[in-house]
Image 1 (spheres, each protein chain N blue to C red):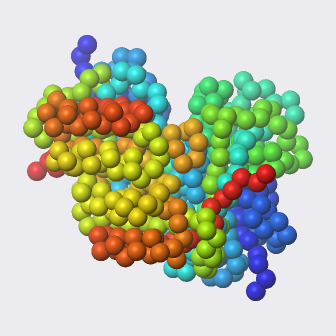
Image 2 (tube, rainbow over the protein chains, first blue to last red):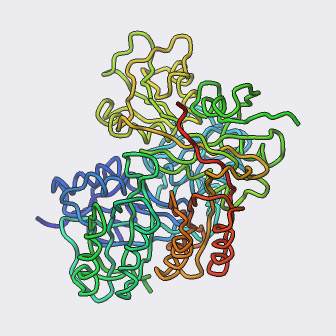
Length: 277
Length: 277
């Protein structure tokens, strides 16, 4: 099967930019949600998919994480792309900010700009859209004065950028995972992403796991928790280890960690992202 | 000042239920968002406020956590309330599920029912509302066939429950924090919630902090991370320690932890929630 890469569409989203970065020649296939992208890879409709996983201002993309924790069967993380994100305020020609009644964006776009939206449009209704690029289209179709928050690539005829960099902090980046049906080969500078549950939600349990990695000189570059969905106070812990699962230290750590966890799932190993020169 | 408690309104939200649980006699003062509740306590408009902090299916309420981490000056957590949550599907009399074009709910309501919504209404648009009770009102005002997801208390004339317990897992509970201007007194069965940043985002650093608590026999009942908002890979860690900050072991642990953290903020100490008989 020739390579194809699915992304959260339509054309002009940050996911589309990430897909073009990973596989410039394409084809790039739009899907209506991150879950559709993941399911398309699961069913082999496309060989690759790209999904957002965390943003430096707004945090984790929880539906993607929850899918990988609870539902993914054959999907593996096989790459990462980190993109600088400039959110732009889009409106129509002649939009008067004081008149704006609705702000459209993807929930992560609204989250990255929460304070600025609150300051600029304290009384406007915020409407969450399926994607940032879709927000610009909905803004153009709106019956009431509206704006949208999306990237520059979300341009549409009739839409103009009223302000650039409207995110709450100037430095803003999003990490995307490239998913496929298998992990990537070791390159010598890799990461492995995994999820685990401890037997008891007690400090000793988590400490034991972290100590297993630390004792083998393995750095954890990310720690996150998500609800186990069974009861309050039950969590799944997500970590990124700076090693490939075929590296001896990590192989050894995983054997030890499996003994101290009620569940351990490796999402995949992949080369660490390096900023392009 | 007589006690008043602010909540995410309008009347009929789960926050309203939590406010009534904490301070049955009221007065209960509705606010349009969690941030408005927190700011009202900050400014002393009300003596208490109640805000959701985590849900067992959908996870943390990130705008509340981010406010406490980055913005809160005088607000202290002084209590917790845990509520069982039954999300109901609300519609008008005679609603035909196949015709439904829009699903209204608060983002956490949509998150708790994500899979069921996807199964019942694969093509419907999901619109995030400011509150669950507000979703029922918007459903009634909708020009197109719509449903809303909210609790039983969100009843409005003209709205009927089409299905109860539409959340993805039957067991569903939400933890609320009661906030005021000072911590609660020790009761012998308390919790202290705090946030910290390590000097380096390396496993050794986090391990050191966790070991400080474990060595003093202090249980951590919750661990969470949020982006520090400065750069990807920089996190603020949130833990709940099962002790009061005036307990000797925790006092001692906090002194030790301050030495190993670049920032440590105690949100407050408060009595642990106990299920009412």
